[in-house]
Amino acid sequence: MRPTMGDLGEVIGYVLKRAQSALRAQIDEALRPLGLTAPQYACLELLQRTPGISSSELARGAFVTRQTMNAVLIGLQDRGLVTRADEAPSGRARPVTLTEPGVRLLAEASGRVATINELMIAGLTDAERLDLLDYLGRCITELEGRTDPPAPA
Image: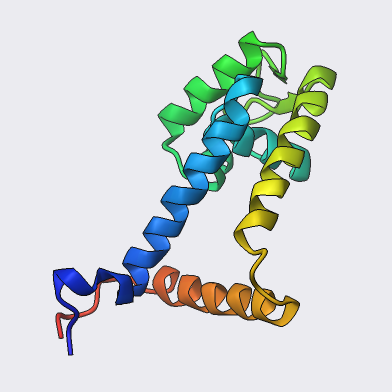
């Protein structure tokens, strides 16, 4: 049986989007005093966790377009939070690295985001947290493994 518009609370994709929207709003509010947006924070986090990551990989990891990531990087560079090489050592990719001020700001931002993540899952047991990660991981695998949308039911 297909849910009606009134039953959206039973549509997993809709509930996931609501959770993502609520999480993003909390993160935006927590990062605003630091002068960071969620994509900027994601960029800094990815740079720390994956040194040498390309701009294209940064864009994918932050869920933004390459053009948006370029603007994010320019803004972070203008604030002295990252540096970009003037020239690419090979190919077109110019390495991006965190500066010391970027590392310090990221530490503050990461603490705020971790607090929000803990708040989000505070009502779950450790086993439920692991189950949630497993279930979401399986959903991602199914969706990312598809090459074309399924036929309508």
